Image (cartoon, rainbow, N blue to C red; front, side, top):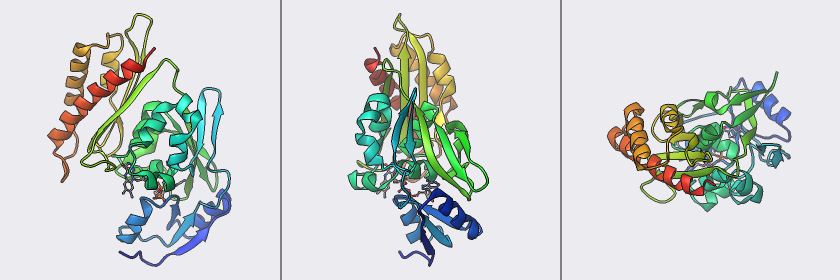
Length: 288
Ligand code: FAD
């Protein structure tokens, strides 16, 4: 349980961090909160030549509001986002989701950018980013770029981040005050990664019918996924039991979750459909 030897640089700016990654032939790794990176290092599942620590860079941990959006620096601790009154007011699903991440100590150290850059398909934040259509601002040595959440998560623990790029900030559209939202998940023990989970965001029209439905699932595929067919099928429906039953049946049809030591594929599929119905009911109750 000891990492292979590595060099270490405490970067004082994003530019310095990018230069350190370049100078080491891209065999470096960014260190944020270390909550996912250190276990990988200690188990020698990864052996980077150098760790580039972002913790000393100022200005990467701000939560700012612009019209219609919340911009959150990648190094913002998960607990800061969880307890931010601005986040709770403007984008409460983010704060709700973070409550499900591990335990208090992990959320105090873990960063929002670290969770997203790690890209664990069973993690809560990637699914929230996908449900909200968040944008990821990446810093690169040659140029910066912005990428949509839909294009960011590519495969199991694999994102669109190049080895010489740093996630600088994530921009989340704020929720309409009329929107309902909910996250539901199944874990073996409190604080574990989810066996299956779902994020639902819903809006009703003046007649009480579903005007917008967003359903993002986690733990059921190599990346978080949007259930687009289910979303489309719900538009214009009354949010009643029969709509939920049909949506759940549709979800069962399209999902092909992996089976592993924690749960079979069939169990995950069944759980995802039930979680979706539960989350939808809770979300609808918050709509006004
Ligand atoms: P690090 O561990 O420092 O980095 C993670 C990866 O992202 C590394 O590859 C690193 O190089 C890269 N990286 C980090 N920041 C950047 C950046 N700005 N730009 C580019 N690359 C970057 N997570 C959940 O979602 N749900 C859970 O239920 C959960 N349970 C946990 C339980 C335990 C016991 C532990 C130890 C962790 C758990 N986690 C869980 C993981 C936790 O959320 C981590 O904090 C998170 O996954 C990584 O964030 P970090 O800041 O610690 O990143």
